[in-house]
Image (cartoon, rainbow, N blue to C red; front, side):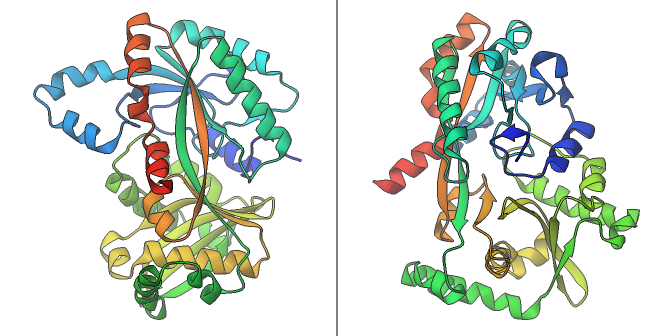
Length: 353
């Protein structure tokens, strides 16, 4: 059994985060245990994309944007899909443990609490609901979180999986999957001897940075030391999927087998080649095939790009953030406009309607 509630990843990944936190992050075990970090958080990070783009282009943004960078503490990590909380800790103790942070940080956030997640036990889901209710009673603002994509491995084969999608999507994906015929795919376990080569690890980190720089949201820049740690870990049941074209590395994907699921965590792309070979789409189906071969329960595909993942056949489960805002004026403003920070929930509601 996991030491923590809500944990979908191996403990060694959490340990690597604690040993090598992302750039600009500070860890604070004195606030609420070892899974609490602080950073200067951009309030626009989870704002609806169209509004965020308008604000970025607005007059004087370079000057007044400094107001948006707030000292913020987070209960949780950025390497776990959910906030992980020690078994045996009452919800009152969780909130009480944040009292120092609530007095010193502009914002204190309990991030990514599961809402009826099919990936977790009924006990963990019930605990999460209790925590949301109690923290809300204590003055925390409850904000809809992101959409976690997952796929049950309940299909017979790729043809069966594709048959569940619309005709137009099947046609589009079959065309993109032809790129797989030109690629060499290799699956390597973490801890393999080739990861002893520092130059090779550095080349992988450079591809991770390409993806990070392409992202619209820059929050947690993982360090080279973090990747060194996880790539050389022999116990974590990590799987690195390498994609090569004529011996040139097109990209890689780091996943973990944990609790009989395949958990997708990190990618690195040589973008020019990755786009040429439709690697985002190809890797999705390679991962599904691998999960099927290993007789796993779920492929857990992460938070980003929900619209694209929806077109690829993913299902979604949502989270809730609990936000304590120290200054009354800022609390009033963010409470009034909190719906503007719930973009994934709005996207999903529109999709359902």
